[in-house]
Image 1 (cartoon, rainbow, N blue to C red):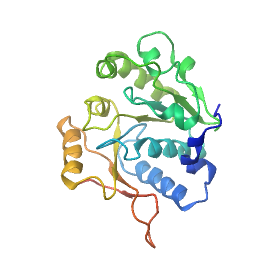
Image 2: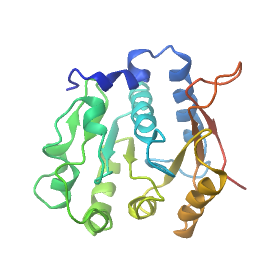
Image 3: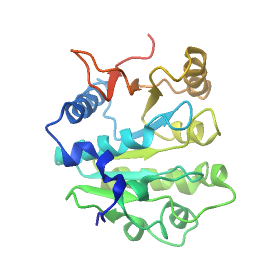
Image 4: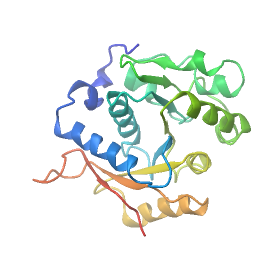
Length: 231
């Protein structure tokens, strides 16, 4: 269950669902749902170009909006190098994804029910010396495939794509990828490199979340969503 935490204020979709920011997350959810006509997106990776661009906040609030829609949601912290999900939700990180991938615990033992009826969380678990190898493993692929049969939507938080190879590895295992960029701080060439890194492994992002965008009359003060990266 969600414990008391000073970071809970970032879960705006839960604490203030009628806010403009929460509505923007719901718009993002809808855009994702309609982003692919031919197939349903059931596994979604959220990454960023660089650290501190708001990817963990974005994926957490997005997971909440799916749960509010009465979807059965699994939120996974696959940032094994600098995990934050347990801090955002105020849960223990003693057991999690690394335990599952090592075969020490099945999915039902590491999936923690949140205070929202439809949302389960899998924190990163204990630190590992070989995160990329663990994420690239057959066990990770099998775990994602199993999760797809038990949940309506599986959302995965990963490290920034330009920092390490982890996000590229995970992107090939998911049906969709969203890239979070910090407005006014990430340079155009850096954003382009992030997209190129995904396309290098055969993945085209579903779209980009522009985070910390300046408030205007027609946009959220927190982020806006650009539906297509390129055509």
